[in-house]
Image (cartoon, rainbow, N blue to C red; front, side, top):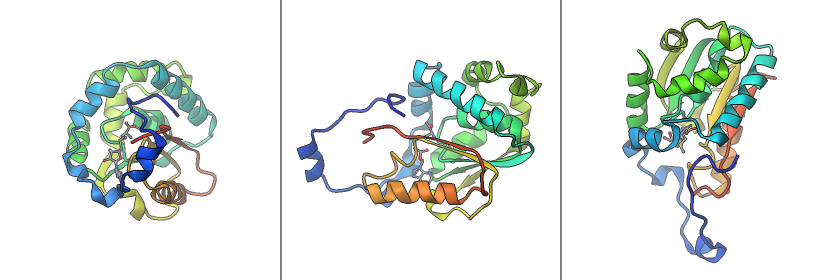
Length: 202
Ligand SMILES: C[S@@+](CC[C@H](N)C(=O)[O-])C[C@H]1O[C@@H](n2cnc3c(N)ncnc32)[C@H](O)[C@@H]1O
């Protein structure tokens, strides 16, 4: 998935000269959640609108009801969680960064108004429209837990999302692939899932 976040592509020669940055090289705890949210999600961008429509229709058709959902690396983005809301009896937000964990805990009792614009796109679908109070449902279903994608349990969740995480947690392709494998392995057999990756993320 391209274009959801601003990026600058480095010339290939420069890229090969730069030492790899592994996931453990980065201090994720200082991630500026509010700045990230304000930059990317204060209003609905066209690319996100398209993604929301796609995952809405995909999850609504999936047949999962009353499942256990997970969003891995939610950061300061609630729209993947909202996508899973009608189909879950529980929803875990598994995030590495301490600052993002704090931000998510603050959203839990009553998330910010900007997310209503995302919900308006979801509720075009009848299954989503049946959720009378998405804020209350988000509050009641979600558990925020600090942890890494690399240590997820196996076959724990019935549906899941991982948005712009594997592509941004490392410059090493091997870590990207490992993160994707760990995420998929954490889901039960045939569980529907949605992931997004930004090309040329740095
Ligand atoms: C570019 S942000 C994406 C945030 C959000 N999912 C979105 O769609 O905008 C990358 C996120 O991955 C998280 N992250 C980085 N390394 C991680 C790891 N090993 N396990 C889980 N999350 C990680 C970061 O803290 C951050 O929240």
